[in-house]
Image 1 (cartoon, rainbow, N blue to C red):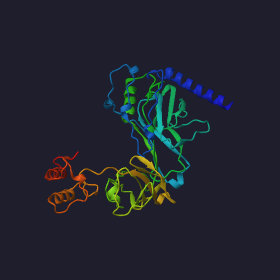
Image 2 (cartoon, rainbow, N blue to C red):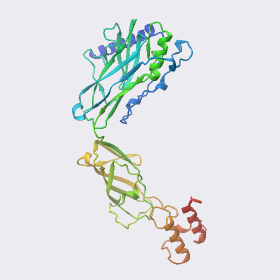
Image 3 (cartoon, one colour):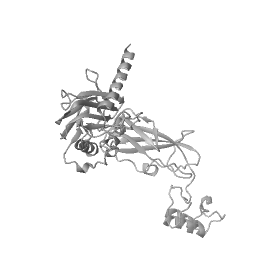
Image 4 (cartoon, rainbow, N blue to C red):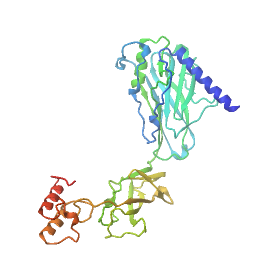
Length: 409
């Protein structure tokens, strides 16, 4: 019975919203179907989301030339709170966020907004099960109001009145959000508005006569007058994840435990130490001086710890070459051990000493071999032009590569 009542209520709410759009929002174009709107507030990258003015499209129902917001001489502004809070105090608790409006010189009788938020936050409804608390701008001012959860992370709010109402400087509405229990320092939860046509009606902020002055005010509001907000867990941010580029060992290359040899640019907030190479099939540990063989699989184990007094997140992730890797630890905030399996590849063309690079050292080795000063034990990789012999032509090719004149393929 409860399920049936819930579905009936949802249907009734949708019907009221549709009738509202047709009856009270004649300035807004009515469409057949709604589109799925991308929630830019839910990227969970701990960054602020600025209002995107490019989403604004002047309603065709206005039937007038394109309005330039620069012609607006007022100073209307709709803005959300930007709140910093301590994690230990706020985790798992409710935080109220206000949306306020100032400078609305033209009285209005209808408004409709789409509010987006980071889905790590959860909305706490009021006692009447409404998602939005009314601010002084609309409460007891003759407005009929409603709100609906479009989907997790998106709420639609509307208000309409039979008469135009002067709003002044006041709160428009409030939303209670539950801060995640596992929130950590540096977590950033964006909240705000994006202009939307939801298939029922365009978002709007308009008077009853759809006056030219009200059109200009609405145009300015949805292009220049909205400022999004956020909830922020204050304190030194923890390191949530690190991305590492691991170079595959090459045939004949010497085994070494130096992180700089194997990894590209290492992020400043972590340290890599205690590298151990082993053959994956036998788990025989490699030592300095051992060489890799192409086609063989090797296991690299290394210790990863936070650098410069930082802490790792309790949800810390290690990504190596674009893939998430297992991370073993007793206390993840202080670091742990990562294990990666990788296959050795063929020797780099021109790398005669097997150090993984082609430089003047290789030119010297090849020149010494050709001159007979010091013969290479295995000179097969020195025949760079593939003519079956090793001579000055190969030296010239290698030297041209090192100098950047003509690279070896």
